[in-house]
Image (cartoon, rainbow, N blue to C red; front, side, top):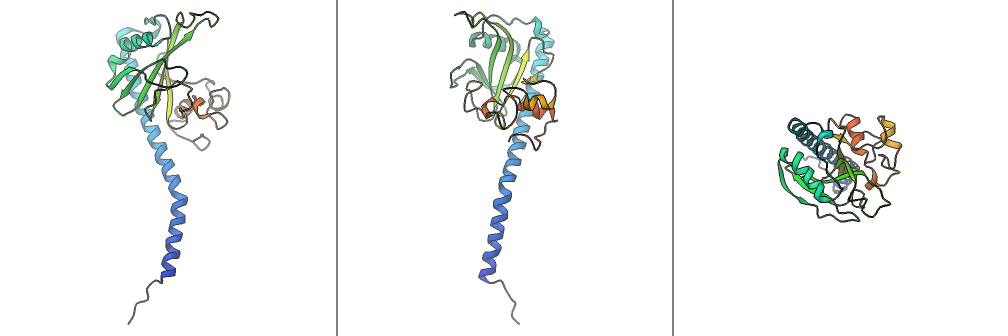
Length: 227
C-alpha cells in the first residue's frame, strides 16, 4: 500500500502562503516588541530618577530651597546634578556631553540599563543682552533620556521622541519627577495643543509630549499614538 504525499507544487504553494502570512505579521510583532522595550526602559528610568529625586529632597529639602546658581551653562548644570541628583544614582559613566547640534550644553550620565541621559538647565533670561544666557535664572532641569545613547541637543534632527527618546523634568516648584508636558492636563492637550504635541503632524524630534501621553495612558501606547 502506498501513502499519498504532497506534490512539489503543493509544498511550494504552502510555503508561499506561510511566507505571505509571515510578511504580514512579522512587522506587527517587531513593532509590539519595540513598544514593550520602550515602555519598560521608560518606566525603569522614571522609577530610578524619581527615587533619586525623593532622596535628594529628604537630604536637601524641596527644590525651591536648592542652590540653583546662575547661568544655564554646563558648569552650573554639572554642579547642580553632582550636589542633588548624582549622589543618589548608580551610573555606569558620567561627564560632559559629547553631543552634536547647534547647542551642545549639558551633562550626561548612563544608567545601568544602558539608557543615556542628557541633562540641561533651563530658565528665564533677557535675550536682548549679550550676557543674558550666562546671567539666566535657572528654574528647571531637563532629562533627555535616549535608548540609542544620543547626547545631542534637545531638538536635534536625530531625536525621536515617539520611540527612542523621552523627556523628564524637575522644576523649582516640583514635588515629584514629571514628564515634559507643554499642553495642559488633558489627553487632548498633550496630543494636540502645542508645538511639542504628540501626534503625526509634529516632527519626531519635536514630539516632546509623547512621554507624558504614555504616562497619562497608564504606561500604554494606544492606537492613536504616533509610533
